[in-house]
Amino acid sequence: MRLKGKTAIITGASRGIGRGIAEVFADEGADVVVNYVASPDKAEAVAKEIRAKGRKAITAKADVANRKEVEAMMDKAWKELGPIDILINNAGIETIVPFLDLTDDQWTRLVDVNLRGPWLCSQAFCKRVIADKRKGSIVHIGSIQAAKVLPGRTHYAPTKLGLEALTRNMSAEMTPQGIRVNCVHPGLIDTDMTEWVMKSPDILPIVLAQISLGRAGVPREIGTVTAFFASDEASYLTGQSIHVDGGWQGK
Ligand code: NAP
Image (cartoon, rainbow, N blue to C red; front, side, top):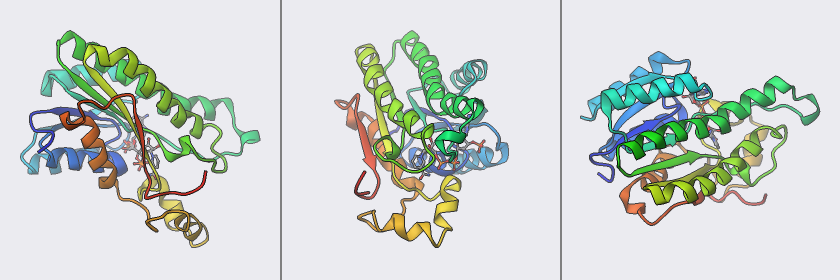
């Protein structure tokens, strides 16, 4: 029960890694705001599962790249479950487009969701935590692609490396105000986002051969590390990024 008495907003918690983080957080005693953008039924199913564990949970629709929607989500969270202690910036999208084919719209949307979204949610969260005169914790969900080259990711990879810089710089400004900021970089995790890899008889063995544990991770394996970073057990840990990738070798 490392998160007993805490309340967390988890962006993109309707599916995949966000859902795994929400499940672990509930197991660790946290109440949860389940953010989603397009899957209300899936978000409600996650909230129902959390309530079945004896915790409080609400759903909150918001596109993390839209300031008005983010502010409305924060207001709803504070009104219905507040004060909030933890923000997990997990929502993200990935497309695979060769560099020379990438359009302005593809670049802008992906950078908006993956980098501007965490910045926006963090700013809205920090202002409220500071106004409450309370302490807080933020964990950004990056990607091992912050440190790797994979084809068609000239827009995606910079957003994830950008989250590492956002983590360091936000930590420098926010930790003195009582809010720790850290980052978890997942490797290959079995979710909707990676279904095409998991189902590819050609690509999957090549990827798994590079991973020391020889398998993909599951969302809860990101949840447990994220819960530690967010918890008071990590009270002297801030501005850090960790790769949770089963030992993915090479660059
Ligand atoms: P996923 O299965 O595709 O789920 C994405 C989640 O993000 C969904 O809950 C989705 O909500 C939400 N979302 C997408 N765009 C949003 C927006 N604009 N506003 C709010 N929510 C939004 O992805 P995943 O694999 O769980 O990935 C989660 C995070 O981990 C992402 O940041 C991804 O880049 C990162 N990551 C994943 C892997 C991996 O191997 N899976 C590896 C490294 C990093 P709806 O259901 O409402 O659409």
